[in-house]
Image 1 (cartoon, rainbow, N blue to C red):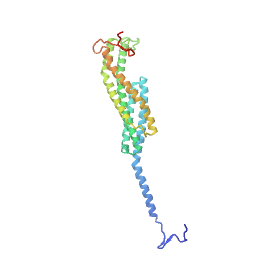
Image 2: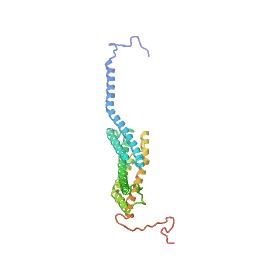
Image 3: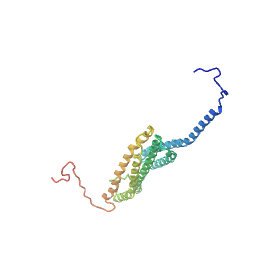
Image 4: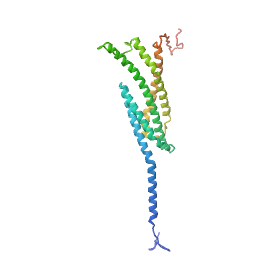
Length: 265
């Protein structure tokens, strides 16, 4: 394309560039960026707070499990309480992001975190019920051992099933019966936790979230199964042991490898 020496000139005179036009465009772009930052800064900050709080709660759950296994029930109770507080804090921080649940990919991550938190809170509530049940039974044992030590100083006062007196057994069985509702509450809460966990999206979830979900996917079913096994035993043991009234029981064993499992040969 060729130009003449005076191509910048028109019939009306020299062509003038107006700086106001591009300046207005730059200012408009900056304004849009500023508005976007104002709109998204708070949700992003809320998401970071939620993630950090959830991670802190997760670490406390691991700590509580180790403390419970070591017999430090008071320490485990404190850790569970702090974990619940962290999960609640994460839930509150996540609230502003729920308006973006319909945004592709972003909404999937928000829903995954939200359901993970709800499931985690229900799991903590179930764990606190179980811990309270264990603490109650352990306190009975400690009371029995304390009473033995007071009566016979210097003598081994460890309470075992073989050394329990009938009165001590009745005391333990009575406390067991009184605390069965705690296991029932734990069963309800862990069931709700499993239901909420099943609502977590299975596709399109970011890798960090997948890593956070994986341990819970293994631990929740195990925890649920433990409660489901403990509850029938807690209900069945007192009647079999003759509490609150003595009774006789007939126990039949069937051989499931025989055509006549009850015998009869």
